[in-house]
Length: 442
Image (cartoon, rainbow, N blue to C red; front, side):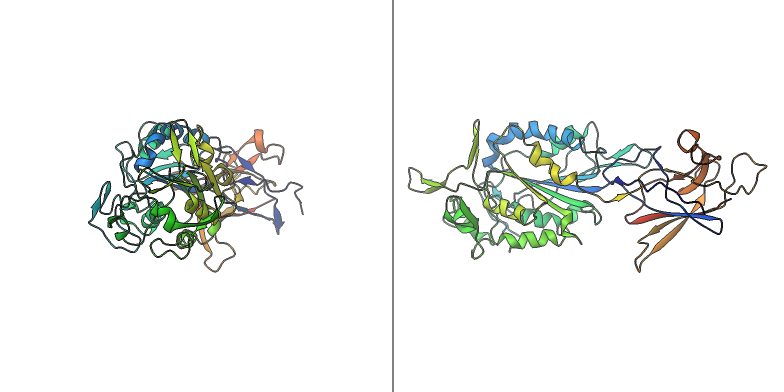
């Protein structure tokens, strides 16, 4: 029996599939049958949802945000292997006067109108549909649903303005968006990692009922702080769990974890005011006003205690960044999390043969190998599924299929036949799929 001294080469799933990647598996030859089993890797899928505060509090941050939206795509492109298989959606935190326990609201107070944007993803003319799709194909190109550049289209989607409701409800808005919202169908994929990035100049002010903003003290935005958090000192604050008017943050952490079979597939980013210090002063009319926790040039942001607490519910999968700085890309891209996405496996097309194969028809040019080739999904599970791949026809039109080729530069030092098996596909295989091959060998 011939024993290979080479081990499997493993590549992270975030590595793009190169057309000429070659894998030489460790073979197992029994009764002149050469077999191997390779776990396959598709590009990682990442659904990125931006929840952006469009209240008047964001007015002085708009120019800096627009500049950073253009940089966001550049940073994504620096991930090892290039851009993943992306869905990018943008929504606002404006739910108008509708509270978390209301089914609908028709009330209007200032810029808070009815149900606001109601958790719907934004549309722009340059993007077909409610979100950006940008995915690699097996052939090496990318399939997109937008015109011009990704950076331009994302910046256009994310430029939400600052004329929305002053009472921003990002937590309830994201629940509304991801809880089977018909306008957002297709955005959330079962087998994709989910990254949610909150961008705000103020904390979450999700309230239970519309009466919170339609009562006599509707203009008192400080009620979001007094009802939403509790502090033992300016640097020790946490969300209230007993507020009669605002839901606890744990309600939303539980909802987001429940979106995935593995809660580690959810990542949270917050670009907002640092959660401390929490300090106040009295305005000339004697009303309590929350002080900023950061400033940058002409802009300022108040402490985002509730948003930071949500992020902390996802340890090692979170990033909290101050909005009061020129470069926001670290928080926008969740780089420390996104780079770690994916499993391991073979992401190429060619497999060098480690043994000489039996030629069924020596009179015909090339080696006419006798092989059985299959994609086996969930190979060790009860729902194991096998699809046998056909031998490619003359034009490889019967995808997925396989054929043998001579590749002396890469496989010539293995055997005298210089053979490689080329797997031709229209798309990447599904998750947890193995390539299982058995060939008659000399």
